[in-house]
Length: 456
Image 1 (tube, rainbow, N blue to C red):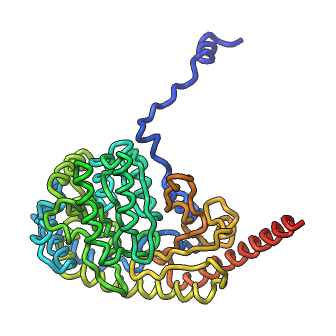
Image 2: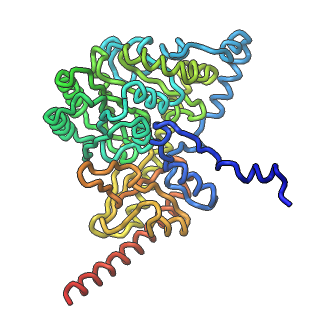
Image 3: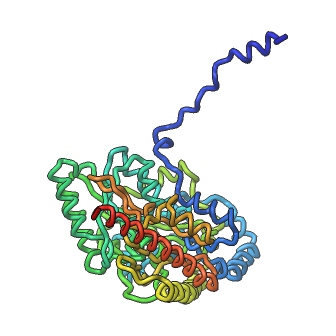
């Protein structure tokens, strides 16, 4: 016999669903989550996907010495363990301002900057997010390169941005295409919706390409000119995460360095790639009115980034260990880049449509395959690579759909030499090349069969 209590429970309405915000519903799972899962599931996998830093180069001894100094002084130790300003530790902002001057080769005053134009963030990713959060409403337009850094384009999509893209060539983002796009938006009456141009100006993730010296001031002039048509300032968000990982090629000034009044540009740097991601610190320079809005939002996030790691970063800049470590990284990563490029030359089949970029810095090599080869997640090629024990980032993650056709290129992949051990680079490329040879052969047989069927 069923009790009254059981009957009542059986008659209850189904559980109510959680009502998520529109922003939460727009936010998709980041592809990096799946790639990390695959790497953890198979420890023997050679991971050419992860854009992480080389664990063997992390500055353990330097940080050990710094923290011992910090905590040997009780007053300094208490200061490091306390809260600080939302914008970040003042002495650190002064130190990174000097560091920016050294990188640019011009005084901060020539860029309209002082320490009050800087914010220290929890990684440069937080700064990118905050800039998007204070500038973009759903339906607003952000212009980016295609392909682009998929984590940030995912962030922009979650904010409701309409991400419109321009192609890249050997000189980086096609600035002429930016002009054509802005002019089309002006003619269509949509220029008022444009909020910013997002540009990774050094050794872009994923392609490794760098914006040429000639295009940098020209991009700034474009946003100035079209800001006048739009009736508000259009900003350039310059992502310089890989700037200091330069192995050869020219050392360009930033786009920011041409903005003498500090009105149209934001530049974001990080301590993660050139020093240690565990510090989880970035720093950005931006116009004062934008900085005020960003600081208001950052106050809602965290009241200021971790103070202890800010003190460690400050000491690394002061005692020379930061500069020394950057040089060590440049040598270590250049060696790994050269090993990956040499392995590609040795192992890859010589077929039409197969090529790769030679980056002058950063952590990535961008590979293009014949259009008949699908590299996307779930494709025969991706699954075969996982089975053979090698992992890459599908290039499709990095593209925005074509505005007219909705098409996304599926014949590219991104390789990273950052985290992978030096002795694993060649075996990883050999496994990848074997899969590509197999997929090219399959595509060739399919093409030949289709030709025979068509002829008959």
